[in-house]
Length: 267
Image (tube, rainbow, N blue to C red; front, side, top):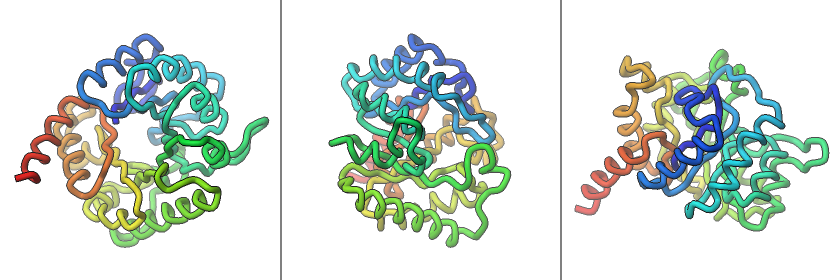
C-alpha cells in the first residue's frame, strides 16, 4: 500500500504532494514502483496534529481520488469523517482506511461512518486501533505491559469486527491494523510487532504501518529522512509475522526486500 499524503503537515513528507497534480504524479510513481494499493489522505494523523475542516479535506482529497481511480489499482482513502467517506465512495474509491475504526457518529445530513460503509455494496474497510485521539494519544499513551497491550488491541478489534458483522458487513470486506504509533509507547509498538500473529485469531487480513515511524527513530537514532532501512526491515518482519498488507512510503525498496523474503520462504 503506497502512501499519498495530500497534506502540508504529515509527519514524514508534509507538503511534498500537497497539490492535486503533484499527488497524482506521486501516485503514478508508486504504481510504477510496484504499489498494489494507493492510500490517499487529506488530514495528518501524526501525534498532536490539528483537525482539518471538512471543506479543506474534501478539496484536497476528491480531485486526487477522481484521477486515481483511473490508474488501474484499488484506491484507499485515509479518513474518519463520514462526509468524506461518502464523497470518496461516490467518486469511486474502493477502500476506507479509518484510524477511528468507523466509530464516528452521524453528522449533519450524513449517516454514521459505520452505516455509510454498511450501505455500500462492496467497499473494503481497514479498522485501526487508536488509543485516545491524535491530539492526545502520545501525551497519554496506553498503560500495561506487552501482554496487556496485545490483549487490549485484540479485544478492541474483535469488538469492532462483531459490531460491523451485526450491521451486515461481510467479513471479506474487513482488514485490521494494530495502530503502530497511535497512543503506544516504543516498547508497546515493538511488542505488537513481536506478538502480531496473535491478531490473526480475528480471521482478518492484517495491515501494518511502520514506515518512518518515530519508534524506528528511537531505537536507531536515525532522523526522519534516514529511516528507509529500518522501515523496510519492519515491513519484512511484519509480513513474517502475518501481515497481508504493508503501508509504506518507499514502495520500490520494500517490494525488493519482500521478494528476498519470498525467495527464502519458497526454498
